[in-house]
Image 1 (cartoon, rainbow, N blue to C red):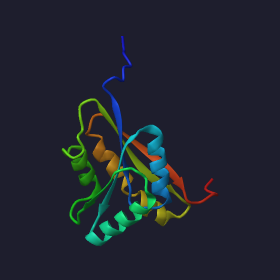
Image 2 (image 1 turned 60 degrees about the vertical axis):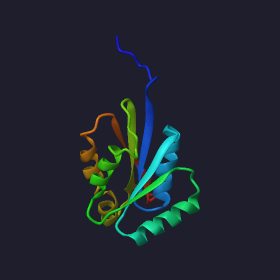
Image 3 (image 1 turned 30 degrees about the vertical axis):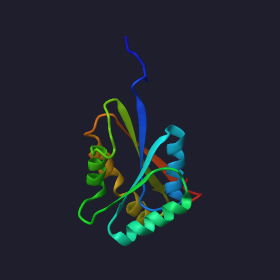
Length: 146
């Protein structure tokens, strides 16, 4: 008989954020609907970008921890994999991790490519982990998409 116990279960959410914008806010709102254990994660290529992201984040006053990793050499997929397995994240057996990827929907091809190009790479890199759910949160830039 299959049992649906959630006694030793907690859903932890990581929201990947490229910029502090409406798309990020929308993804964070969704994260709050599914868990109270949320971390926002970004990659900055230099100290200036890191300071800019922190400044914008502080204005939002979300109460959600925000981690910015600064690296020119590592990509977001490597960074995310390292973060999930790091002592800083404190992953324990039985945790379910939901990685939220904001996804832009627009009629403009260049926007689709620029904003959504990494999603497939991130998706594929996370498949090697157990207990990870990948959720795309759509953000519609154009009102008349369909």
